[in-house]
Image 1 (cartoon, rainbow, N blue to C red):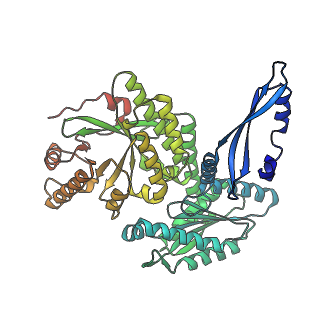
Image 2: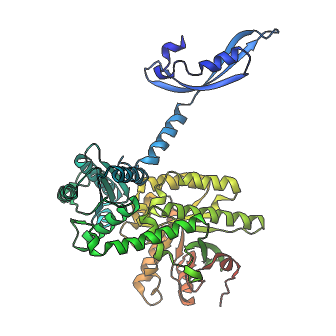
Image 3: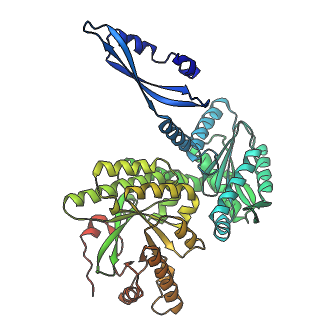
Length: 509
């Protein structure tokens, strides 16, 4: 019988449905079950069960249609795993950690047994990543995760928050014990570790400690974060403990207020979109617009620039919501203009945390399907820093959305040692040349040689180049001669409210 090869947990599933089917109460039913394969492992199948009846309505035969859904179930299981786990290290991710932290703070408040949070940030990790390469950096992060796992108790919650940052929740822990753990972590990590089969490096970490006595979960993370930065400012390779007497409460309160302001603005759908034009140097026409986000100013004041609030959004887990809001509204703008007969190309910036969020591709695909826009009109811009934060997940994200037709740009190219590595190993369509090579290019032969080399490489790889920080017509003219494809900067046009930017023509001299 089928029961002999049915998974023990699935025997008897849908028995009531079978009785209802035989009684003529339903025409058919479906059920998912696991059956043992001839090779011994279990496979998932979707059973569709129906019945053949005679002219009097009596059941003659039961028909079972079997569809193998093992691959689909495995994909769903992996996606479910990634929702709560870090792709690279296998540790819990920020989402899971923050959920467990909220539970622990509630428990500590109820029973009067405080715990502690440690925020652990590796020192100079970007330099290691740039000098040894992405693969060595990933291996190093996995090694650090392994060492931290060895130190964590069974009741502790260890997570990778993103990039080179980890967090450890210590339930029912005294301040003295939390300091002992922090000191042990600093000492454990400050030793030579293998970064590859042939290379090793000395890794150090800065650790911030905060005790949950009377604090909310958000305050606790903010205080641990502040303490971690105090450890860095004190020289790195050490830990620091949040102490209210040091004036940290005022600073954290200010950050919490900023985070709440961002959260409220998101809920009220009041973020502002600005746009900056990108000029096609071959046709002298606008090629696209880079979308920039602003936070409305207090009392109708000047909107806040990204540098003034995106850091807070990153630290308080709001950056994914901000990026999602920008993406949805950018796609909406493209759709509205397509309906009006205007083919609009927009580029949006993504943070490292958003790229590593497995829900983001689903959000983008849902918006593309809903609006029906040409995906090629949406460009995602990534910096090296964002790619470093989670390279493998970033590559999966880009590969998936490029298969849908979206395009990708590597921003600030040349600013880091790893630029050519990412160009080689990541599916970019555009290279945005860092403004440091553009500002003085008219009078600096070295900058001219560097930009010429970048253009030659880009052309050989079939990629387009965009020069940033183009402020004078002479710069645009020289870039055109060198062979740069597009230019962006105040000569072309500065950031403006998006509808104003879209209606402002570029008037070439």
